[in-house]
Image (cartoon, rainbow, N blue to C red; front, side, top):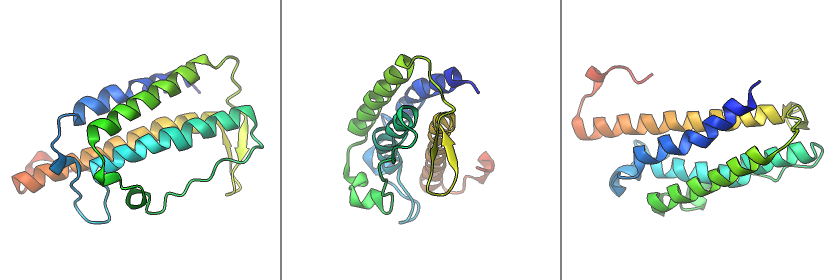
Length: 169
């Protein structure tokens, strides 16, 4: 287990995400291939919310008192309920960068951390601090892949058959 490597990935994720998306036109970042899919903007809003409401607070709670109940998350139709696709991408990205910087300051400020402390999840699984930290970085990667799929879809939307480029999977 290498917390420093994970924290490094978390710290540098915005430097990958922001330049990739910052100059996109609204019609592209709001586009969905199907109604039930998330747009790039909705993915970014989700990343912002997860930064504030999931990973940082749940890791903090687990490290401070693993017996303390985690705050609930209601992800059912969250994009619709919170109006994600009506927001402005630049503002969402700026807020994400700020929240991620706050997370990194907090993580780097931790001393003598016992990442083995574990929360007893309602599923019956124990989730350690290291599990959460690794999942945080994995969550970033999953959504970067999702964004790449949207970019691939945009190429097909605007350019026709794009199979010559290769298989997305």
